[in-house]
Image 1: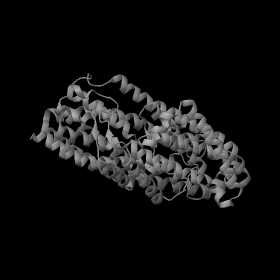
Image 2: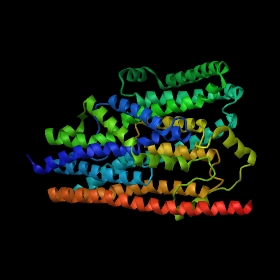
Image 3: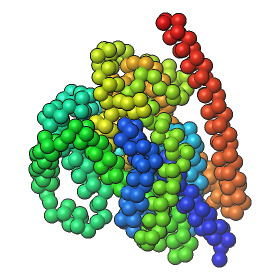
Image 4: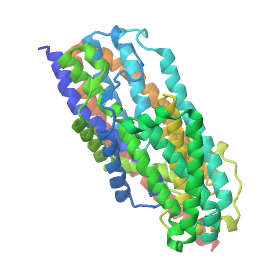
Length: 508
């Protein structure tokens, strides 16, 4: 028995657990941001409900995991030790990057990080770029970039249109009967399409349904559903009291969250599970076994549960609160962004003061003292995100749930004009910081994976030991940096709050 292979296999089990938790703390937590931002549910209830559906989605996911990740690299060009080095490297680097990003409240894509880790690792062990399928790699990268743009455009337009018809008067029964019915029905159709294309694509009767329907027939069916849902919702709204009318978009938002959670559990599981499963299969059955890996349902469920545990961490709440505040309808929010990001943010802001009447509507009709935006906006965020992900999945393109959801939050905020008042430069600065972090994560994942794979492959046990030491030291140093950053930032915030109070007192 090769000690190098055995050591990597044992480490893979540890990293499998750690990776699932880190994916839950960063990627999966984006599922609850819209719900909690609108205070449709409190944070714990939102996490518990989303967590149940993440576990269910993982349990019903495909038992066959594509470890080469959409043919990013040709595993046939690598021998056993090379392949083991690449997959364990993807764990080393992705877990550390996710941990650091979560500590600082920065949402990042596990899919993008994993893709760049595999490409960088394959180049590192071979010492060349020969193993990477660059055309497929470019296709994936372009799909991710386009998904951000498309999600942003659709979310902006949807928010503008829906807000024009409903405004901030979600409690007015007559208005909700007239316009809330067809708007909510349209969202339901989006979510239905999303679940059929993305969430339940591995279930037999759904596959049969897809095969039996032509594209024209499927879209005609969706049109029929929209009309049917509109009529049914209008019927119930007319006979409902004010409380149920107000809660219409709350129900839609909750349905959107559980739909996204189920699909996330099904399709993003490969990001955490595939390297560990690939390593075990290669160690026990040889290199050829890694091309198609069959995983028992109980193991899939355990991975889903570990992702749920990650959603409960403090790091997960850091990501949630930061994203919510970035798109908050409140004029002034407390959130960090570097000075250079704020300076760039000022250049991007089109200053145009909203009227006192409009501001009064926003705060009186749609926001309480805790909410950062209303249920309509939460519903738009989730339904648009679901629609974009479903379309991309239907085309066979892997995209990032995190990037799509964040783009929807920002775009709906722009549609509501939340970046033209108060400390908008701080919010936009945060957007700049997050997006620049996305590009930085891809660069770091590729470069660091190249180096780590090279060290592990050529250094073997010594290289593994060195990487483990660096891994744990990086986590400890990151924790200390985050604590110092938080302490320093809190002092700055307190000073700014005191100055604001002084100015308000002088004006009074």
